[in-house]
Image (cartoon, rainbow, N blue to C red; front, top):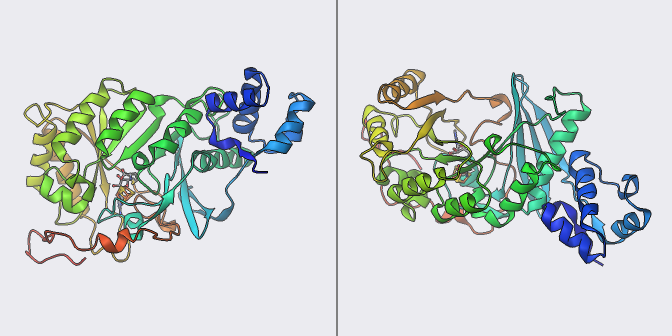
Length: 384
Ligand code: SAH
Ligand code: SF4
């Protein structure tokens, strides 16, 4: 008989399942706390549950942790885990300790079907969506592993204070599994994260931005990378379906319910591609009062490109990143440059590759691109 994987449930789902076994709903709260707050997987050790319930759990349920394939620790304290998710696929999770917080970067898919030019996950193609339990298991593992090691915790005993859905995959192309996972992370009986400290990053799946707003509004980051449609469509192919004007309008609608009063725009700085004065001015125009959706309250996070073999792209020199930031700041935008963390273990943004069976062959399908990207200064076509 198939056992029910309990990490797939948010609290509401677990309560309904408990009821289906003839148990009272409040039992679900106890069970949920054991699973998530205590990280317990052995039903026999859930000592305050009635013996009869424990017996039912042993017969009908299971807790599926993800097998760890490897753990790497960088000199700056960043940790990267590779988890086996079966059938030749593996996904990565990264913990980034900072003075005042611990951030966990979680994967939502094995691979990614969006196929952004500058992203190593995108170059690998797409295998499958992760389930709710597989998304939650990454946090559950990291939190309890780090606690057991005596990592620094906050007043409530929590080591992971922030979660960013910025690992492998496009979370809004897996919204079905994502929404319950976010609820588990937010639940006071689960991980008790605040909505402001839980960030979903998207390359711009416009209809799902609305769905996230309606169902589980958390902090929103949008991967922009270009402020004109021609260039953005080259870098982020999804832009052809959801162009910038629609994306900006969706961001504004999102802010009506968001826990923060701004959207974070991520902008990966690519040498000679999107890092000049003209592109900075386009960005200012896009989010300004005269932009397609009117002013979009935002913060800009510039990410120095992390190269990987086969990207054919290079990181903008620091001086250019600085000049770009200063131009945005002068134009009135709050702008920060992301510190690169964990690059000695390939744990930095866009370097997460895991191991993915490209079942849809997106990697090869996406190769032919309509317009060649040109190096502005030399006019030479960039290698693909
Ligand atoms: N699919 C989602 C979330 C995962 S990517 C998204 O695209 O938003 C997380 C962030 O890393 C995104 O902003 C992405 O654009 C950025 N990124 C991808 N590849 C990168 C690279 N090689 N160097 C720096 N940042 C990169
Ligand atoms: Fe997918 Fe995000 Fe990488 Fe683009 S940047 S390919 S959306 S993971």
